[in-house]
Image (cartoon, rainbow, N blue to C red; front, side, top):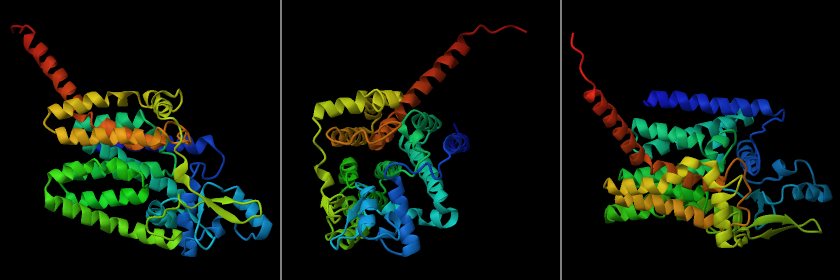
Length: 377
């Protein structure tokens, strides 16, 4: 599959998914579900109000008991700053990048942004898989046979984070250490837990020598600096996030905080089994070809890229370990959005496997042609 064929096929599928989504609902902006509207509100607040204060978006024009009553409907989706005002709970990097799309297309711009980032993620899978015609076909299969497909009609922070993870691995595999560090820092800014999933990339960086480590670390620090500054401004400290100040409304109408990071209490083996085998959200059922990733990793190891195989496998496993104990592991539809990095990496590691299958099939066909008796004129 050529790059042009890949682009045409992806565009056709993505537009078809968007068209189906638009036709299935009469509700305006029906692609904004779950916490997606709150990412959109952050972008709107920055563009219209020029600040991160969310009162105008959450409860416009309200005060007193009415204000508190309205905020209760948004509990779990916003945070409280030290002054007691509502601010974004979620990372601001995706809303910041989406501002030009909002300015040009209005709120439909969030859907345009999402289609673009899905394309970046799917192409990243192809590149990490080897950037061959077979790898591009594999990436499209991964797109069609994973929750990424459903999330095309969305404004997904999970797609955004997974794309950053995949391209971080690509930069490390290509020994582009500054780019690797920048992308790693942005991934941590997008979702703090992604730090653990990109940590195995450090193995590749270390193998590149001390200069590689210095460049990657410096670049990551530069990329994370805005996040640390925003954390200090919004939540009271550079290492405090919106999840540390998750909002709830008290009986008297005042605002209090809870720590979202305390919501990892599910028994490990129960949660791990659910992530794999749940009938609606399990990885085995929502991304069947993905289960071949251990075979793909073995072939990648045998091809001479053993440390890349180790890094990718570690990323997949860490993603599962993080969410096996998460109380809200099923706060998703159409497949488990929390496992998008694992899906993307698990498909990408299969690149050499399917290239070997293609080569074997072509060799067998050539051998059969050579064995065919030649007819005389």
